[in-house]
Length: 478
Image (cartoon, rainbow, N blue to C red):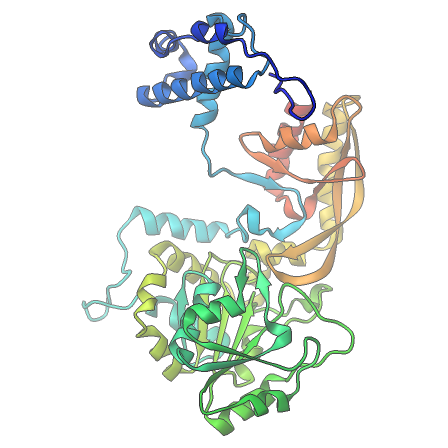
């Protein structure tokens, strides 16, 4: 249907004579009873969708859209209604194939969990568990104890706690340690991440007062020292995980900041944002501090995400000195931010893979994609290229081109991973239409458009997705 335009164009004549021709809801429902494809759709859902569909056509008529009396005849009207009902029944939360090349894609669910972890999640939901039951004593237990020991072993911290995401972790630490007190932060670390999470806003919500020191690009130890007063409750360091300041820069090393805090009896906190247990510089990326290194520097409390570079479920992890963690655990806010059994089960499963770094790099999908050699990505790309050229000869032009993948998820900004992408060009199908059509499939295929070509980066397409991707492309392009 064509919607009339406004502006200097003359007003469109509205054909109100069409309104009485709209089919009645009951009439439509009688016809829908004989549609086999709607057999599993509840009657109430059919009824509501039918009302909505008829109302939408009514609104199109009143807006002056091109609707004819022929469109409203039942043999023409019902097929559109059936399609509308089926579309409404589609799951809203759906699987996608990630061909963007962004490994930790915030909009596509961030980190993928290993198969073993998914088995653990199924068991956690399908059976009872010892979520808050101590199997040794037979008494009520703490859900945090299920992963705390593992966190301490892996990071070297004295104690640990897990909440529902890293923003919550930062909030509860600030609220516990610095409510109604001052928190000193370098100006260059007042970050904003996706979803409008800003350090100053979280600080305000926690009841702490922000004290900015230094310049945007350079902050010295003396800047922190000169800002300390009797109201100072915390020295905060925020790792710039989603942007980078380069050139004439300086920030205070953790060890120096810790000594300053100890001299004044003030705890030091670092928000790592996207914490990692593995040094990923071995794979051509810039050196990022690991959680173990930050803990070893003497920082009193460290916060980081579970679903970014760690490769686990969404969680905010807090590790540090026992006396501080114990204090945070007693904060009433902790109950509002606590994690459920699925997060606990998933996180424990991931943490148990880390004692052997080789195992972690092979079995945790996020790390495996980062560590994947370019020749392996290329082999995957060539495999699907051969299949497509065989089955879609003449339908579309396919090629493998050099591409760039990104870690994503607010981690390692502007750092590239060399990759290979499948490039699709069609003389018959507009590239935007092709992108939109692939996005509308039951298992959506998400790529990116560059130079009037649709690119599907094979670093983020799993081996066991190649057959499904091939099948989808053949169906759409045929």
